[in-house]
Each structure stands twice: as structure tokens, then as C-alpha cells.
Length: 284
Image 1 (cartoon, helix red, strand yellow):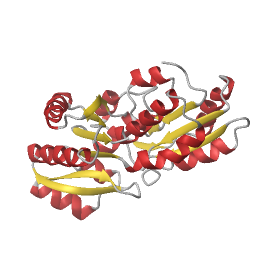
Image 2 (tube, rainbow, N blue to C red):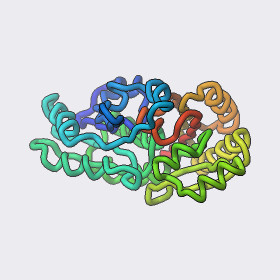
Image 3 (cartoon, rainbow, N blue to C red):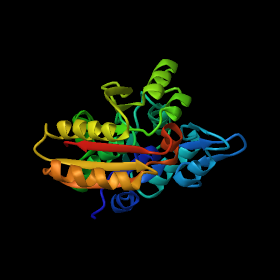
Image 4 (spheres, helix red, strand yellow):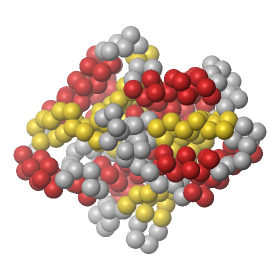
């Protein structure tokens, strides 16, 4: 892959597959997973499985990258000879990472940055980052990315369903009534991010099987808006189900020219628990 004159920086919760991080030479700023007595760097010093293994004893919290870590990454970009960078972050409606990166980038001498708020999370944000990566590899300028990024964000969605509402509730993502009623009736929401980049329920179904069907239907409908698209199927400790979803969608969405698969980050595991299935669509 020919290198771009512009660096691409992502946060760890964009969930770009490791092979694509290497392929496009992306720089990664890790968020944090916080336990009572220790803090870990997302995907660097902790894995998703380690979070699952410790759920019985403690459900950790998460936090944005520290300013020091963010600055270190951007200064490494400068040290590597770049004068411009695109920084792609998860939704400002769900995390303060976007605001943090804007603040830190403004203080790094010799580096002009375009900060992209994906208004999405996980591989939804990752698909935006990959679309930007392809632009840069094709020779796009920083002005091109600034002009096109809003369209890319608008044309990208992620739909996900979880196996339990417990972790969304503990993390304050859903209220007490929604949690109680949903758990009692075994109602599973299909969740996406709205235009403001915050979680909204786009569909509901009773039980796991029906919720997966609803999520696939939502993704297929969104994908039908575009003549071509890229797709992603990610999971949180649900690889077998993810493979089945990928196979079925592969038959239903025949105009997808690229597919991405993988595990969600430890930070996202904290908020969703085991059993997440996420389906991303990018029409850019």
C-alpha cells in the first residue's frame, strides 16, 4: 500500500481490524479500562477476554485517552515526518474522546489536523476510518477529507443487539424502566446511533433469534440505499453467531464490495457484556 502524505489517527474504539491498521499505517490512541486498583490501555494492556473473565468479580469503568497519551501519539506522527493528519474518533455524543483530540491536536506544533466525529461507535466508526484511509491512499488532500467526511459519516450506520441489557444499564446507557421491562419480557432492542451520535432503538424483538433477524433487516435496508457498500460484522464473545450472520447477509447484500469482521474492543465489552453482534454498513 503506497503511503499517504497525510497521517491517519484513530481511537481504539473505532475497532479497525489490526491488519487494516497495519495496511494503512494508522496510528491508534487507546482509551482506558479502569478497575478499582489498576488501569489498562484498551487493546494494548488488556484484551476482550480478560474483561469477560473478570466480570464476575468487577465490572470496570472506561474513560477517554489521557491527554498525555494522545499527545504522545500525535507527536510521534510529527516525528515520523508528517505535517498533516486526519483524526477519526467515535461519537462525541457517546464519548469525550472527540473533544479531547481536538484540544490536544491544537497544541501540537507543526501538525495540521482534521478531526472527524463519526457520530458512531465500534466498527461503525471503523468503516468511516477505512473510507478515509482509502481516500488518502488515492491521494486525497486534507481539504478533500474535510469536504467529504460529513457525507461518509451520514452514509454509515451500525446496528447492534446485545444478549443482555445488564451492562448497558450499569453503564447508564438505558434507564431503569427500559431495563426492567426489557428484561422481564425478554425484549431485545436493535440499537444504532442517530444523527446526533447517541444511542437510539430502531427496532425491538422478543428473544435472541428475532433480534438478530431485525438487526439484519435494518442493515439490509440501509445498504439498499447505495449502489455499492462496505459491510462489517463484529461480535463480543459470539463468534459462531457472527459467522452465521455474515453468511446470511452475504447472500442478502450482494452489492457489498468488501467485508470486515472481528471482535469489539475491551472498552466496548465493558458497556455491552458478552453476546454482542454488530453490523456496520458504509455507502461511501
